[in-house]
Image 1: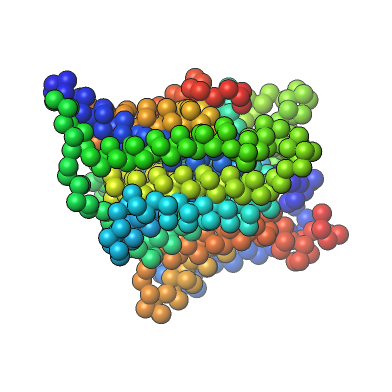
Image 2: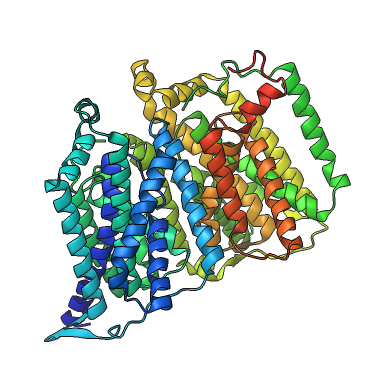
Length: 290
Length: 338
């Protein structure tokens, strides 16, 4: 095993990790503002992946081009879930919110199993086997495009929360809910938008993931857990933490696949989660004490 | 957690005692009447009632949400099965180390979590992480069959070897029925004890409970360890009933979710919730299977979908579960709504 093999694996893991990061960012945004843990996050990602695959199979639409469509659909879904399902649960005990979203997750997984069947489906573009070569370093083209797409979306989302008027209003709800209500912000609508935006991030991530990995119904719970690991390692509620956590998990999984055995790679992620929860429960970049 | 379904006094009323005696009496006679198929359904129902009671003690009573109870099922199952197959230790003896191992696992999770006051969502995720970690770990242990599965020798099913848990489905049925009854008695006893009131205090308001001088850490640890040990016992019985163990099946997250269904549907934190929930879900599930077969639909996932819709409806419209609702209707609770 030479250094260039390791470098290639690490870069591949980093690129996939950026897509994971975008998905986890959606979870972090939703939790950071609404304080509700979206237990159906991976299932929504799987739904977006299926949308991308179906658009590709039906109209030969490149997943990169179907991003606006899928993200728009997921935004609408997220808005409706927040306004119709979660809103009445905001003041309910935490475990009831959790069970509510767990039931949504199981409904989505099995709904997809019934509609799409258990087989893995993927997207095969003209450039699926293309790659960029930099000396000994070979970068997979689809992974590079997916990572670029994820990074752009993540930056756009960060910019929205930093500079846009609505973004600032949403942050105000997160920082001081009573103050936000006092100054007359429409909190239920802003919560709806927040969940919608988190879901839209998932929509983009789903399209990009469809380029990199195959989709099947059982992938939903796995992606949910992955998103949780990333945001907890990075710090639940911290947006930069989610991005760095995603990259970290992507690279560690790639390395574990290389150094140990691929089937044990997610064990390493769970071990990382346990270590972080044990030593630094607020996560690497989390500020708030629990 | 609201106070619904958490009566102030845990002594059973006369009507409840009569209903319980009638119920367990009827269930004890059931194998004489029902056929093999129905018996296998009832067996599963009592498995979920028992393991649901164990989970209920931790979540419903002590307020600690575990979504990784498959960990304890699996540890109990594998420990007893490995001792039996590799060392010839009968499960009646093997149950002691099996329960101890699960309790130790529960204690490790509890130690990590409660030391740092990790609660709610974080605690639930920690329990999932441990279960998933163990699932993948066991998939790589060749001594326990890894992903190929670990098998117990199938012996004569007409035997009634209680010590080695080799016998007919009737034997397993009575074991699970007895365990459900014992769990009911145990939880009832605990809920009436000082420890039980500590748990309720922690569930309702941890800070206030601590201010009253309750040792939060120790009290929560006891809940986790008892719950884990009970769950391990259920795993042991099922391992010897099915005679095969696969890490992906035993430790899988879907198993953990199955465990929480009955107590939530029946009524979190109530004594009879897990039994009611297990029965309702068992009837619903089997009825659905029969209906789907009759309609010629053999789609995987339909049953889970219906369970999830049911769970959703309960959480949305009847968060206290079925039992508090039924109890008022059937006159077990005087004075209407509590």
